[in-house]
Length: 354
Image (cartoon, rainbow, N blue to C red; front, side, top):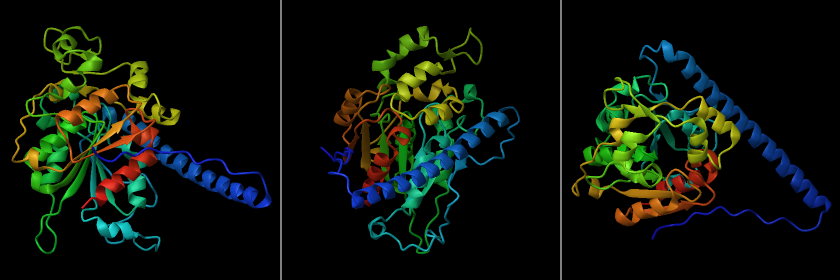
């Protein structure tokens, strides 16, 4: 139906000799440099998460809801390649270079730290947003009752997209993860002229009249049963009132989301995950052919996913066909952790599609 992206390991070389030994040493040095860079990025992301944790009792609402680069090599729009390198040829084929990253349930902008760094290295301009009650936006999740409330940071961002010097409206590429798919579906319906492409990363690409929760029914059971019996529910307004949110236990999160992710990234997630507001994922979306139906949608499937199984993802693209489908072999529900390079290549490929 679409494109398939599967990483393949390179085959080992032949017998040892001085030339091959020298190459191996070169590759080893390169791996060490890459490892050191990844370690640096991870330390910054972890520091950010710990700072968020420490601010949880004294947040005054003044901190930015957006996270740009976690890299010391951050670039500006006026000087996208401050290191003096020429613009890669493929960028000439990309009309819209602004990429807005939307996290899934319980996550925050912090989860995109590898993706942000890689997209910036490629010359694109990524921005990761914290949805309401997520990441460093410490709005009480018990007060987030609608999808519009939850998506407010994205709505504000799209409302403020400017026009260029010729008064043409600038457009962005939206990338959503997991239940964040409902947020960009909402955006496609209300701001279709501001979105060039919408990418659903193992996400809830719902149809008209469907709830985001319905996509997870195979793993979590029916919405009605979940609301009655789940031990993960949060009753922010008291036990005599309907539940307001939920949060999985750490061991369950590890099994559902991070079954292929590196230990360091799992540790980062364990100190950063937030409770999930229940109202937004229980809300039925109203999507029309005139707005949502005209949007350019792309879906990325994750083939070792325990939270949203490959069969469920296949059903989503079959019932609500996007323009293109990509697959990442060996990825859990969080490819930005488990398969960041594979995800990066697919995002670049989608960005280049005319």
